[in-house]
Structures are given as structure tokens and as C-alpha cells.
Amino acid sequence: MPGSTSTPTKDRPYHHGDLRGALILEAISQVEAVGMEHLSLRSVAHEVGVSPSAAYHHFADKDALLTAVALEGVAQLNVSMASAMARYPRGEAASAQERASAAGLAYITFAVDHPNLFRIAFSGHCPRPPEREKNPLIVELFDDLVATGVLPAELREGSEEVMWSAVHGMATLVLEGMFAVDEVPRCLAALERMMRLRP
Amino acid sequence: MPGSTSTPTKDRPYHHGDLRGALILEAISQVEAVGMEHLSLRSVAHEVGVSPSAAYHHFADKDALLTAVALEGVAQLNVSMASAMARYPRGEAASAQERASAAGLAYITFAVDHPNLFRIAFSGHCPRPPEREKNPLIVELFDDLVATGVLPAELREGSEEVMWSAVHGMATLVLEGMFAVDEVPRCLAALERMMRLRP
DNA sequence: TGTACATCAGTGAACGCGCGTTCACTGATGTAC
DNA sequence: TGTACATCAGTGAACGCGCGTTCACTGATGTAC
Image 1 (cartoon, helix red, strand yellow):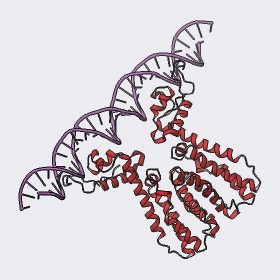
Image 2 (image 1 turned 90 degrees about the vertical axis):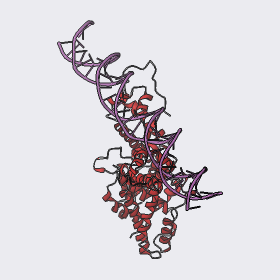
Image 3 (image 1 turned 180 degrees about the vertical axis):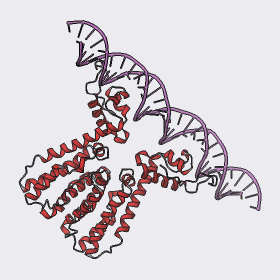
Image 4 (image 1 turned 180 degrees about the horizontal axis):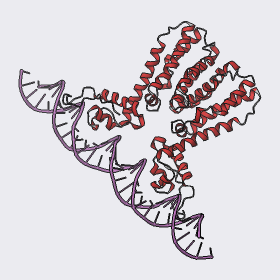
């Protein structure tokens, strides 16, 4: 099951160089393959070519390793969304609509492509953001939707949360088999109609 | 951690009577307490007052027991929603709106009150409904919303999925600590505005 | 009504397993003088 | 430039644990005759 990109041969020096990073990478790969509930610290260490106890110089315990994986999952999801949105500039109504659409699709696409990474990102292993601040990408998006006249100002209140909830719910329900993947475009279109992002 | 409602004393007859049911009940209680990933078949059997191997006369393996728990979770969620909705009759616009509102709130309330049971219900341990049919409660609700003129007919397509996604997403995000519980009413209100269920 | 017997639901001991974690250790590195 | 030494990142053996599952068994039940 493991990636076997490891190099446990003789040429590896005694000191790894970036063992912490290597452990995280291997852990991500194993989580993606088998899910966070089946991650084994011993197996990660073994695959990196190192003894299990070596990991304890870099992580307090297995849970700390899982936390690092979760943080990386959150970061990757954000990158996916940001780069999908970056293609549509601010300040114009049609572009703002497309940006909203792209954001939702990127979110769900990431979940479908990396189900177990997506799951661990929302599993409580990720430390709560201080003050539970909103995602600036989304706030900015809705600012723009209102500014360009797409979304009526009186509907702005709470709309970020509704959008996030709906997209997150869709992703989750697809992952758990309650929706088929090919229903997603239809559902997203309906969501955009509800949100006044489409005629 | 376990409920200790068991009666492992001498008065218990050799044959349990309903061991299967008792195992499921205890498993539900342990899942609610520690989460499905920490459920131990041995501990369930022990708490019921029976040897671990006895469970294998009623379940093929541990996974079959988890499946039974998941099915029970789905059933309980449905009961919660149905009874919340039952208070508002069909055929009248205001009543239909209240019914929709009650359904969403009941869904989230169930998740908050039984987080681990809610999680296992949507964990893939529950066998997929044949043909992935929609929940009749929800279909009927939306039929009524359109019939009473609350929801414009041209918005009907996909609206069940949007509603379900949004409510499910909210529940999930609250459970994982991304939303505070006390934000729920505000978010639900925004959802209802989006769905044209409120002025 | 009584007895033989098939069937079923329990017991309890044992299996093998992989796990997270600890501990005393050693090899490598870099810095002070 | 060379040497002593503190520091750090590895090793590998061992710990104890609880787990799911199997197996040969026995106690209880009900049914056929």
C-alpha cells in the first residue's frame, strides 16, 4: 500500500536532513490511501526508512503527525480554490459570478479527488482558527458580488455561511455516496440559482 | 465509559432472549460515547455480560455490528425530522414554510445532540439505498412548497438537493467546530431567505 | 407423558497481530578555545 | 589548525496492550415419535 519512494539503501546518510517533512509527506500519502483511522506511525517511519522512535524527535505523538497532515489538507484545499478563482478578475458582474461558480466547483473537486485528505482536514485534528475567522477568499468574493450588483445587499447577511454549508454538504454527501458525482453540476446550478448568481 | 445497564449477575438465564438487540443498544451507547472508530466488540460484549464470541452468532463480524448501528442512526434521524414536521399540516403556505424550517432545525439539532451517531449514519457503513432514492419526506415538503405558491416552480429543480446539502453542511461544520452552535439560527434564517421561504 | 436427539446460543481459552511508546544507546555535527 | 565536548538525530530492542476472531466445548430448548 505505501508509496515506496523511500531510499532505505546504504547511500542514505545517518542524518536524514528533513525527516520531519519526509514523515509528513509519507503520512499524507498513506492517509490518502487508507484513511486517517488506519494510519500507522510505524508504517510511515518504516516507509521513510527510519526507525519508529525517530519520529518522536519531530512529533510529540501520533496525533501531532495527524495534525500536521490535517493542516496540509486545509492548505491544499485553499490553494485549489484560490487558483481556480484567480482566473476571474474582480469588479465585473459576470466575472464575479464565474468566480463564485469556480470556487464551489474547486471545493467539491478537491474533495472528490482527495477524499481522505478532505476528511481529515475537517476532522477536528486541525486546530481551530483563532477567533473562528471567515475565509478571506470568500468574504472578498461576496463583497464583490454585492458591489457588482449581482447579489442584493439585503441578502448578504449570512450568505457566506450558506454558500459554504451548501458546497461543503454537497462534497460530503458525494463522498459518502448519497449523491452521485455526476449530479454535482445540476446541484451546483440549482444552488447558484438560489443564490441569485444565475438568471 | 460504558453504560453499565448490564445484568451480569446470576439471575440472568443462559439464553439471553434478545442478545442481538442488546448488543446493538450497547454498541449505540458506546459509539455515542467514544465514536465509531473506538468501538470495541469485546467491550460491547463484556458490557452486555456475554463472552465476545457470543456476538458472532448474531453478526458476521464487527463491521456488521457497526452497520446495524449506522442503520439505527439513520432511522432515528428520520424519526426526529418526521415528528418535527408533523406539527405543521400540508396545504397552506405559512404552514409549509414552518414545516421546512422545522425540518432543517430538527436535522441540525439531531446532529448536535448525537454527534457520533450522526457521523456513523453518514460514514458509508450504511448500505446505499437502492436506486439512491430521495427522502420522501423532503420531496413531499417541496411539492407542498410549490403547490402553496411559496417556491416558484422554476426553482423547484434541484432545490431538495440544495436544501439537504446546506443543512447537512451546516450540521457537519458545527460538529467539526467550524461554526459555533449559536450561529445556527442566523445561518438557517439566511438559508431560508435564499430559498425564498422568508420575506 | 416420556424420551432421544437435532439445533441453537452460549462459554472460555487461545491465537496472532500490529500498534504506540519508552529507553539506553550511538553516530554525526558544529562550536569554543 | 586541532582537539574536547555539548548537542542533536538517529538506532534497535523491548514493553504492554487490547483487539478481532477461531475453536472445541456445553447448556438449554423444542420437536418427533
